[in-house]
Image (cartoon, rainbow, N blue to C red; front, side, top):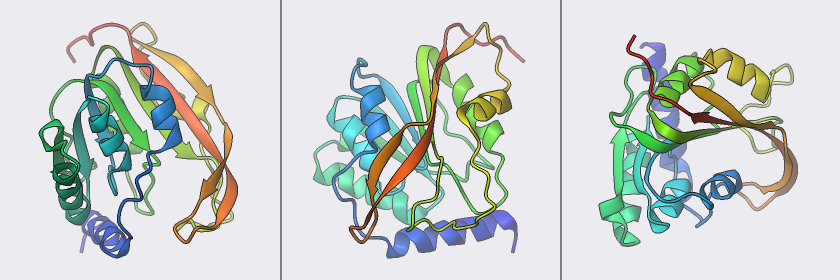
Amino acid sequence: MTTDDEAALFWESHYGTRRAWDGRANPLLVETAEPLSPGAALDLGCGAGGDTMWLARHGWQVTAVDISGTAVERVRELARELGVGSRVTAEQHDLARSFPAGEFDLVSAQYLHTPFPFPRSRVLRTAARALRPGGLLLVVDHGSAAPWSWNQDPDRHFPTPGEIAAGLDLDAEQWVVRRADMPRRRASGPAGETATVTDNVLVVQRTAATRSD
């Protein structure tokens, strides 16, 4: 079994046993998207679909992708149930192998972490290049481990927003960092527990068309 296959099985098991969507979207997604005019959005690692549903219900045309087929099918069903099925396209992708087609006004990568080897910088660079001029790439990472996190490694390094931006290696004339900070918030876990956590936030805006490689 390859590492990619192990990753797919891990996330399939994760979403196969996870409770249904609780009606919430990630707060930093809402904070970033609320002032924007709705357009085309890409939700990388859509999971239970909270961000996808929020965007679709606020007028966005959303492409939602996840490595888990269970997660993707649940997002499709949820979109139909909420009456936004025409605004949501859900696709199964192992982002280490494939990336959804299209150009987007907003790409959201919320907690795109995995316990398996994963070319994250390459994926996020591809996401930045999929932006239309003026579009935003929002990357929200864990800056600390919540008590309910699957990753409790005490030696784990949480890359700072500056480190994430440097890893993207984008042309500064074509992509501009609009936000790079580490806010703290009170978060709720799957069993209702709460803890103060840190988010590492990076927002990059594309300002010009990308030159052909």
